[in-house]
Image (cartoon, rainbow, N blue to C red; front, side, top):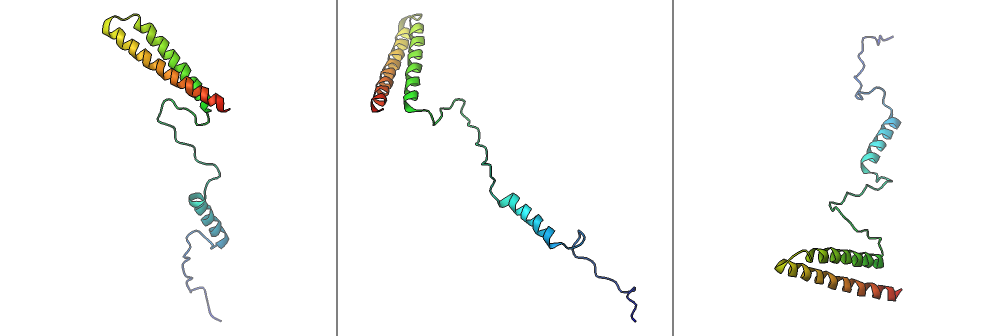
Length: 118
């Protein structure tokens, strides 16, 4: 009989213990899924750099109604200011108020046309 006690066994090439192909496959699948598989949850949208934003879901009629009200408010504030001014500053303020009023008339006409379509 041959004495095997003096024969050296080759060093293991796998540094983490016994070679287990199933565990290696599971680890590889997890790693690939982590980097390559799409997430079920879509990524959160990036925040807008704009301070104010109008939602795309808002109806055109609502947009026009709010535009009309905003222009009416701006016109009221500017008209109030214009009566506290004198000279050319008053004329400038009244000219801007008139432009706001013209914008409000355009918004109101567009609002009327949207209502007629419904």
